[in-house]
Image (cartoon, rainbow, N blue to C red; front, side, top):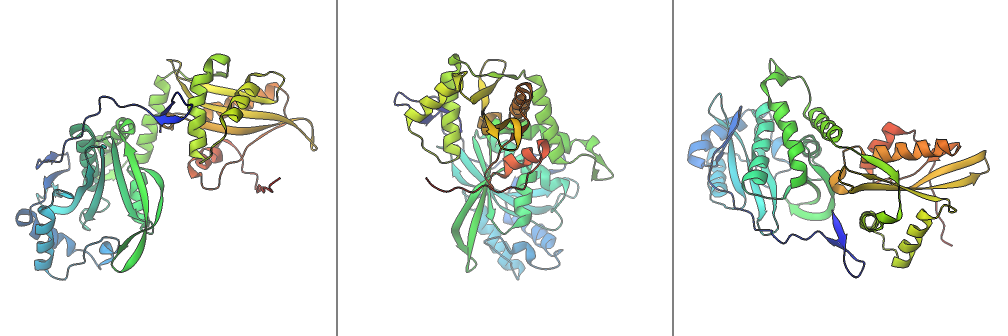
Length: 391
């Protein structure tokens, strides 16, 4: 998260003095190119949904849902009547534009207008809807409604941690994995660890652009995609980056306040709490040319610090020249995915080369999979494992 430093040198969240609660979902139709979302109506949609589910070869589609399977049409329609009567979850039917028939449902749930958060849940897609362009568009239409019409700032996706298809779907749609809530739920007489994913409002413009490029008619040939959704989203990210001017340079005394803000964010990410005196000492060392500790930061065209790295030169028993150890690397959350970390690593590499170092290396936590995805592209994994012993 973005943060500021208060008068007590404590990190706190950004102020939102003008925040107003979000609007609640209404019974409106959300129009798309391939499908439309209609407020669920058991009388209107029930029979079509039941027939769509009869195409399933077994009941595996209900395994990770808290409801179903349903053995009779009557039981299924009764469930739809109950679901349609709820305001939270607020259910929509996904209606195919070509056939005019409902083929699945999804909902907005855990609706928290005061805090601006909402979850997409009860995604019940029949075999006729699964892995189709209509399925992807349905997710897009609901996201767009939540962010742009209702004004939510956080859009969540949660699933059983063992539900691999749901986890893959979340990542494909642009959600960011946030973590695992252990022993979070009991359903169908079994325990569930819940995987959490989210998209926030700052990320929505890029994700929206990826959806719209993927859904465009020229992205399909005989119903087969030409470019994947993830690739189009990455292309949008690259275009966004190229429009900005990134400046990477050594830290100086005027950068203190911005560095403190990101430094606290870095410590928070690693769940660390260092004394203020140690952070002050680190800053002094970064600016002292006689110290082996160095600092580089990346700035946007307005001079806002987007990330930093600290690196240390040290002797080695394996080389006549110094090694360069990249000790800290952090990118502001709202600047991630724009090439900041890659630019910082490259700046350290060039500096180490200029200073005649023979090796640049670093390590990261085994659970930091996002960082590892970048590191695997820009460096070689050494295979060594780090051990520590307290002193």
